Image 1 (cartoon, rainbow, N blue to C red):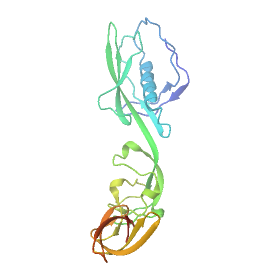
Image 2 (image 1 turned 45 degrees about the vertical axis):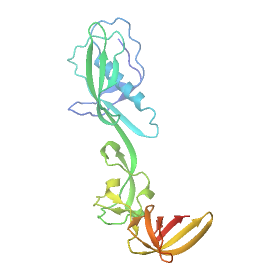
Image 3 (image 1 turned 90 degrees about the vertical axis):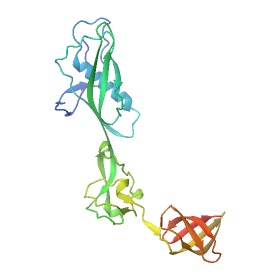
Length: 247
């Protein structure tokens, strides 16, 4: 009979499965080539846990929690003469809820599927207070919160500088994560507006005046008509009313 070492406790699962049980984090002793009786379900759960831990071990920069659902004890599986093969079902991702397959080849082969869940946590940018659509985001509007990333299917931000100065496209409640779909870049140059053209030639910079031909945000390319030569050139918006042109 396999023995367990270094026990760890799992949390409550899903599908009505109670997960208040302890699994071993260490290795199981090798099974004899010929084993009589039924396959222990806890051994199978540990096999799934070991597999998922190995699949996510390179994510050292992330906070990961793995839980494995119970296997119905009423299943009478013939003990495998070798360790069962473990595989992910089609379309399964190593995040959120997933199903892991176990397959035993032998005189009496069997295949079962075990529910599992991988939670990946990170510190993401969220609102410190209720924020209204159309507001320009400032430093005081932002804070970091620990969030389970599978809940943020629209993406997320981890650095405040990526959000400050952007305009909200919808209301955001206090404590809720700010996602890319909820913000847009602020318009720094508007169509028909007089702008400063900064032409760079190596280390030399020459300034001139022009007229923007469309709205543009920071970092966007915009067409500008030079006020003196009437020539239309393109440059990148760097700050309000300023367009940089590389010559």
